[in-house]
Image (tube, rainbow, N blue to C red; front, side, top):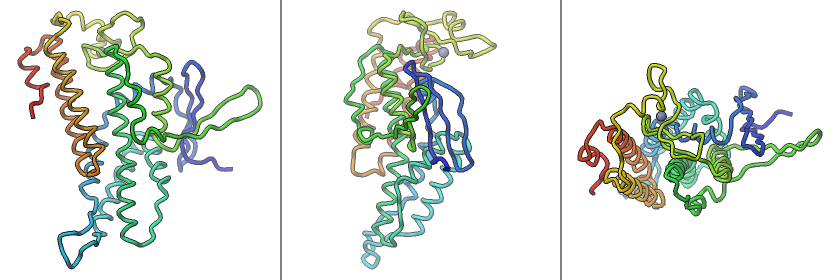
Length: 324
Ligand SMILES: [Zn+2]
């Protein structure tokens, strides 16, 4: 029997993970990894390209005509076709750059089971279902980054955040196989469900994660001691751990103005995004996600440069603080 399209995962008690992807082209064994590494891969994923495409899909999406009395309640099918062209372009791009992400985006859309009954209502329902589905992974990515940032500051994670919207319904299929040794295999057809499953295991493992003051990425320090720099090679074969201490690093006071402003503004921007993503007017949402990325890229870079003595407190605050 042909295996269903999707991701098949087996995982041991230490978080070692084996996975196989089944696509239209056949089976693809992905390289072995761990829960922790998969989480970091997602955190490091530059999701802006994806978010920008989703925002374009929003812009192309048809709305119900309300201004023209002769066409009141009609839906512009050309707009819908244009939207679907953009959805397919996104799928094509994502599948070619990252097979796992692309395949699980595709299967999640397939599972919406949209069947055209020829009515205008179908078009509107389909539009909303597709946009919700595409947005889910961006929402999840932002939630995950927020959780990882919280952990890296050694703060408690607010577990109620995990009840957040669609995640409460996150589901996967367990497949049991019999014979030598018991093995549980999990089956996913949605990227968000897969990462949600990993996130719960990740949190269970009480991960020790830190933010590198040199390259600005997250990493897993070898010990529980406060570790400022990671082992990534960033230039001329040298790692952050080798380069970091030679930088003109500021000695940071506990209540450093810039770090406090960063933390405060981060929460403010995240809340702003959360509020609009809960709003019934989804058109504002994609834009807010992009606005958040724009801010966090700029602010994180300013924080990093400030910590490395490249810019002053005033210059950093100008980039970080948002007063509107
Ligand atoms: Zn680093």
